[in-house]
Image (cartoon, rainbow, N blue to C red; front, side, top):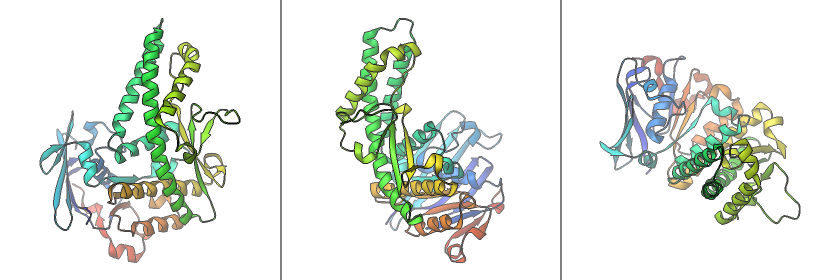
Length: 382
């Protein structure tokens, strides 16, 4: 049997001096007025399950006013075992523990990761390319152990190459060496990113079809360089590819594509003193029935895309680990219409432990509320 997050305890966390919540095996609804700490509770679960916060706060911002440290503790149970994870937060560091022994972030994720769906995510389709890259790579880090290292290696090579380009008299040998290093780093990131997108794409299409059966969702990867050679016709910018069309590319192919592109762009990059191509410039584009969703899709269609993408993340983690992640829904019910709310509620009936925040219980049917653990957060303030 899979683990279930049974209990969450927060000490000197955000607006709580002390908070203890027992969570339902399936659905927990955190109900209460605004500013009582519902989102802070969701953030605590995300921190203890992934080691990160969607708010990207300073450490001091996570600690209760006038206190020096905070502590989060989560108890997981299955039919035979109990596991306790903790996160100790001081003004200068975070420490993770499993059963009172220090552990890594990857250990937290290996017990039971989480997927967050918040109102900010509803802008995923219309947001900037930087935002979409960050979201995709962030999920990659959660889903794959080696993804974080790939990003770090690439980022270091990019920084060093940019530093060389800024020198008044750049040494061509040193620049070439870092171009080679960056080509390998870029190829590794793009290969991992494409593999991830391919998995999510197939699952997102399935979910989207259940929400809007008459519409077809499509995703294309927008590259800063041409990734496929020897085409009958010259490919012009922007370089747009379906994930499937790139699935047969080897890492060696990608490395050579970047080496060629760096060579062609070198003089311009020296003039502008910055690397102009690479995965830090790439993007993904969504289409509905062949029409660009960012420009032409309705708000409802764009929200269906985001909903399908987030639920695809849940399905992918289940496929990867054999266990459902915790689904965190932070005040999204108020942002969705009835059709999309019902799609979410039908989805989580597949045995997915879900924590939902809301100010309005009328978004849920009586049957759902009867089977859920409903927590009145107005009574949890400290």
